[in-house]
Length: 349
Ligand code: DGY
Image 1 (cartoon, rainbow, N blue to C red):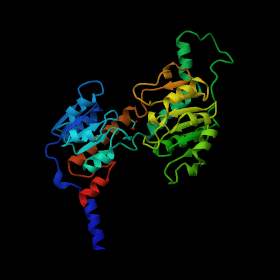
Image 2: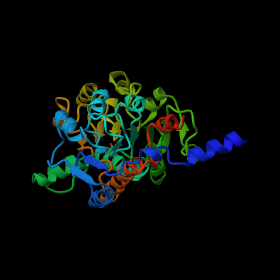
Image 3: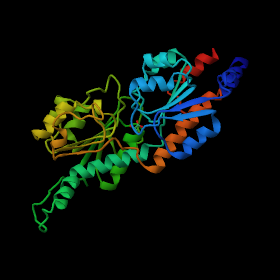
């Protein structure tokens, strides 16, 4: 009992009180919403922001973070073992994203460096955008808009821009985490059947809402819309390739707002070009910002520049969350959103 309460006390304590950084020096790799920058400036001694309106080259990134205490980085910054070794004074990398496939978390944990992310605050904005893509590709919104602007609209016609029905169709969700669940819950408004598959065996909030958990094969065969919401890792890289696309209905549409490399983009271009599937809505790409040859020439794909979480409110919340995580760590406290909480357990040993 006594041991337990001692442990509880220890867990409630800031994990590295003795390691509080007195005059924190922080680097922010890209301009962020003002309220978060202001917060950092109030709490830290030095806050430098990438002065360029572009992603830093990796070498520039390394030089910029070499002598910092904390770094607020984006999904464009590769934080591998080499980066960690090049920045030995950095105690925390706060990723301005919920996904953290740009970071070698195991290497950071080995070195006692805290990694944080921004879960929860971008769930709705990202699910909303996945729906925008679903509507845009199903109802050919972008194609029709281009047609009209080009001066081709000569009046209503029965066969003009026929798209796919959404209401009453079947939505297949790959990855029923926070965003996948939010996507699925919205489907009730369109009386859709919802299928999902998930790597975790935990039950999903979707279960109580008429959704059915199925194997990937059934999801691909039955769905009119397949929407990807899984994290990128070694198990999900090219999860959707040539074979999976071939199993989908020829009338189906693929939506991806998660990470580009989950889909084999060359296979997708072929599938769209040869009517193996009907269309796609993509916010993310395999070699972002580049796209595989042929993708931009296709009419049956709607492509967006990775803007899933891009609303003023959401990006402000993400920035404040990332900034709060950095300051907590530099104050010797446990941040709200650690990706590698093992670092704190190590500190308690
Ligand atoms: C994320 O958070 O992982 C998104 O891709 C950027 O909002």
